[in-house]
Amino acid sequence: MKKIRVGIIGYSGIGKIHAFSYRNLGFYYKDIPAPIELTGVCNRTRDSVEKACREEGFRIGATDYMDLIKSSDIDVISCCTPNDTHRDIILACIKNSKALNCEKPLCRNMEEAREILDIYRENPDSLVQMTYMYRNCLPMMRAKQLIEEGFLGNVYVVRGKFLHCGYENPDRPMSWRMDYEKSGGGALYDLGSHVIDLVYYLLGDFNRVKAVLKTHIKERRSKGSPDKIEKVTVDDVAYVNFEMKNGAGGYIEASRFSTGTNDELILEIHGDKGAIKFNGMEPNWLEVYDATEEGKPIGGKRGFKKIETVQRYPSPPASGYPGPKFALDWSRYHIDQCHEFIMNSINSRKPECGIESAYKVQEVMDAAQVSDREDRWVDLEN
Image (tube, rainbow, N blue to C red):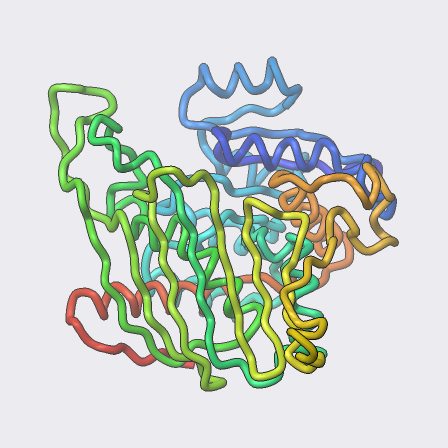
């Protein structure tokens, strides 16, 4: 293998972070057996494709994603497109035996999800990894270890939030993220999917959900035609109560109307032996509480403690760059996720975060939408 040749479908914000990650993997990891090349790019317009080729060095440019998927000059694909294209791109990659790293969520609805899962199971050697990159955040990796070691004991309460702002501005124009046909859901799909995935990753299957979804601003100006008004058809805020198969109960909030927040993913898990806390705006720490510690005198040594996860990614394969003590940033999760994908593709290894786990997240989101429409608890398939 002389090079690992990457094609990126969809080259706006999230496509660029995938490109950044692939381009810089060699600085962070020394186990990749060949240089990585940003070979192909696909975007909607010819102008944007030519700009990407000129500025980023792609040598293959296309406006039809099949040109990348069918190309013998491209080894792996990243899908960074709106949700309504995921089904077709995933199925095309499976059919053409092309390894795929696909942005979340899996698709728009359970009908698409069942079709994807069925075809994937008919082609078990295909490689589709999902970009739920908060699993690659070191505090969550450490939380997984602690939970598997029994640190929390019996888990009783789970609380998760993912809070953004900006959509509360009534002058914000319409986009695909506010269109049900293109996105499948709003804050629930955009933000809540990450929290749902983390809860599933750490604690296992959901059992049932009861949700309330709110759309506060129901009409928006068209982005291309300011005089045209379009209807918002997804949720601005999602509130999801849930019960888990292991008996724990909890609550997830996903909001794009949380004025004053930026990118605030909060997760708290409480058991009879301990608790953990994480806030994505403080990504260098996992807070832990050990209830087995002595509480006397005057509290003893009990209390939440910060574990300094910082950039202590496992080594090997991590190279030690930029050093374990330096502050972490959001792009680092993507870099680790892309490394995981590349190594899975080289070793023909089934990804931990693949279609089957993404299906679980899709199932929870669909059940939440049914629950909101019908005002009832909805059981999960499991």
